[in-house]
Length: 269
Image (cartoon, rainbow, N blue to C red; front, side, top):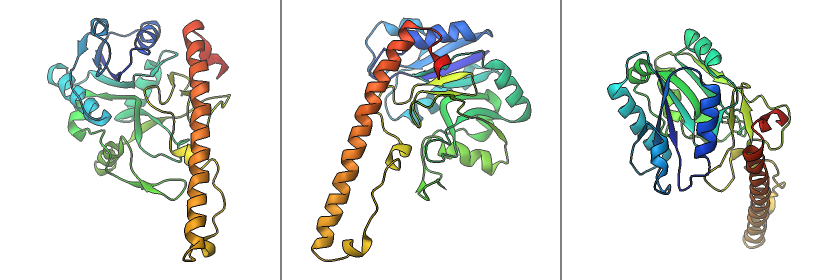
């Protein structure tokens, strides 16, 4: 049995989309387990099980995994999937091959500034391995990214558990042939689509470094003029990121309309 664990937050807009693609592409028995914080009443009937909880995204995923593990068999699969993600082809051949060679199959968003951790937009693991690893989607464990930032993100502690136990995992990488955006609107391994920021303002690590004005640190060190230069620099960065966010939001709305009207929209990606 596959247990699909998904989170929808403050919006129902992705529910029917996600469930439709699951029905179309997952041909093995599965049950849907969801958290629907802030979603209008009535949509809970569309899932096999709804777990009512509040908190951050990793905490919700951890709680759902714990509830699934309580009743599932050891060899059952937990398929974590973001609310704005869904399969666009049968993912199970990739999953079964990956799990024959490792303990976990997951998206690796290396395009997001060189992230190194499994990402919950799509991740599959056996129940017994989740329990053995003491699986945890929380932030905490850190790494240096492509911009030499020492950072953490969702899935950091899961990466630490994999490394601590010497457990190999199978990354599923971005396979877009058309890059409409550096990190959003992504197809991974030709099997799963992740819209990106489907429930929040669109920004990510990669946006911060698409454009960075050259800093004049020798001037910034001056007592008065340096303060002015630092303020101008910060304002330029904020303006750029705001414009990028607005541009991404417009693209997001356009692609969402395509998703609703064309079941094979992803072929243009």
